[in-house]
Image (cartoon, rainbow, N blue to C red; front, top):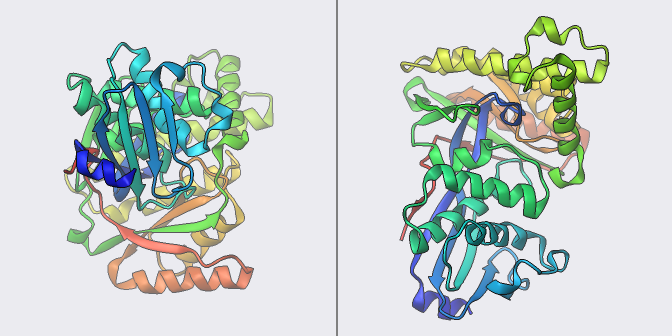
Amino acid sequence: MAGSLEKSKAGRWLAPGRVNLIGEHTDYNDGFVLPLALPMGVTCTAAVRPDGTVRLRSRQAPRDGVEIALCALAAAGWSELPAWAHYPLGVISEFVRRGHELPGVELELDGDLPMGAGLSSSAALSCAVAIALRDLFAPSVSAAEIIDMARTAENVYVGVPTGILDQSAAMLCTAGHVLFLDVRTRAYEQIPFDLKRFGLSLLVFDTGSSHRLVDGEYARRRAECATAAVELGVPFLRDATAGQVGRLADPVLRRRARHVVSENARVLRVAEKLRGGGDPRQIGPELSAGHASLRDDFEVSAPQLDTAVAAALVAGAYGARMVGGGFGGSMIALVDSGRADGVVRTVRDAFARRRFAVPRSFAVTPAAGARRIE
């Protein structure tokens, strides 16, 4: 199948992964986020088929290819399909449901993003497929519609109630910038984040700890936030104040709401400090405070994440925090470029002492969003 796809391919598209500089669990609370796109991502090689069939193949799961008739998607036994296929098939189903004609399509997926690391490989996969479908079959579809289709695929067809952070980062980020996004209004701004100019590196540590949002904890946090908003009499926790949060009787709801309110404030402060090309060193304390809030108030950290953050700070990082939905995954550390190797060694030594698996680490610079590459 790979050979026939190569001969008849219509193109190849890339959607990047992301790290969120600050603003975790604020998107589904109608708040603010500040992600950047990674140089790594998911590619989708796509070709038109005239026979009403969808063929899927992933180089990461070569034995789990899928072939299904478009007309059978609505009644498909999704539980019998490979888990990874729910993302592209969800996008295809949503594309058709919204009235876009699709004669058939053949997709081959590949990528260099570590899966399950909290770097948004799932949104990258969905967005890569979505932009391929757009360019092949419906070029007038907007970026906003792509974001919504990709999120719906994850919410409805996969069963994870995410917000729009990951899909927005994949579609809207630009090289050399972080994306300041107001989730409520969808207004966004590209803010310079020139690490090289200041002799800085942003390190990502994939801790290797389990990160499975479909296990239910993510959905529980989202439900807790919704309950807290109802008790406070506000539409979303974005609308709550610190004073209001302090009046919540339930200590769990109080902690969840306190994180969201304080995290939104951190996003706004970081964005203001970076506007106009400000020195990123000054945002370090905000990153570390964000991790403490995610660990203590939102309770989504993990021992590996806490160990990595603490070790990076001891080694001289200006700030460090877990990224993504939590319960495992990755963390970031803002460091002087000349000290990056020492920070990596310190984190690895700390993991060895705890008998954790050796973490994968790499430096990242803000990359471009989803695009056609061939």
